[in-house]
Amino acid sequence: MTDSTLTDALAPHVAKGPVPGAVALVARGDRAEVAALGHADAEGTTPLARDSIFRIASLTKPIAAAAVMVLVDEGRITLDAPIGHWLPELATPDVVRDPAGPVEDVVPAARPITVEDVLTFRAGWGFPADFSLPAVQPVFALMDPHAPQRLPEPDTWLAALGRVPLLHQPGQVWLYNTCSDIQGVLVARVTGRSLPEFLAERIFEPLDMRDTAFEVPAAKRDRFTSAYVPTADGGAERVDTPDGQWSGLPAFPSGAGGLVSTVDDWWAFARMLLDDGGSVLSAESVRLMLTDHLTPAQRRASDLFTLGSGWGFGGSVDVERRDPWNVPGRYGWVGGTGTAAHLTPSTGTVTVLMTQLALGGPSPLPPVMRDFWAYAADDGLSG
Image (cartoon, rainbow, N blue to C red; front, top):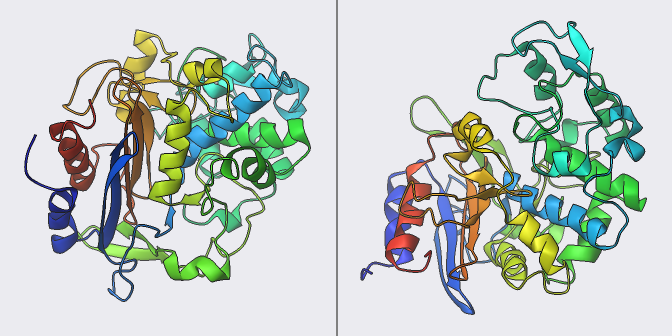
């Protein structure tokens, strides 16, 4: 335990750039330390505050998984059910004979893809460590993390995915990202409602997550940050403004990365999981979300993304102490826009970091993120 503060841990990264600002929270129980530093834009015109709104990117994934588990709790779907019942476009996929081979050389899938395959990222679509594989290229065309307005509506998106062969047979290999988008479409098909409507009614409103959505209305844009990507010279280039891509609902609400949120909203979601689901989920659904479902071989193959952790439903699960902040059972994930959120059931700790500078890739993680986690671990709050 040190005498430093959360502000002390983050300030050097904001002061020297290129991170324009950061809002962070470290909490246990009802006690939270929050820091807000820097500005919502690189020009320094709008100071960040605790209620600043960020594009949370892949911190959407645990929320999409929770929505699927709401339907499991209600008995509307089961984990072993083939997704083709609701998503016929994905009912009979082909699989490339060789992941490094041409996309035209395929064989039929050995079995149907199940709901559990999609939740554990083992359906067969997604990103491996080698982004150059031929069957991966069509998947890139089905995502645009900085421009959600460019994607087609869900039926068109799903039909396009159905024409892409699987990289591996269902259940065999963990592949990143695409399964969360499938989850979002699955929720909409099962319920007959849009994903934004379902999330608002079943998760956001019960948890009072009032700033979490797929769009930012005009009345809230004074709290919304600009978005940046790192440049080769160590600077930052703006790729979206508060009145840009999130100023209206997208045709395709991405369960993989489409939400905006605040540190307090994600804290509310994390507290629900720590409370065995509260009024949103059953304790069994929470247990399944927070349990590693991967084999040791699958964990090793996914190390570029998971950095030694396993995978639950919608997020990683720490299985070993690779770094000081890795506590067995710690659940959460990192967003490519510069966000991170985790909860540790054994200690009741929640850590949430939001910045507006995108990551340069899945690893290594940026120094501001590592220093944030190190502070929480050293402070005794993360386990």
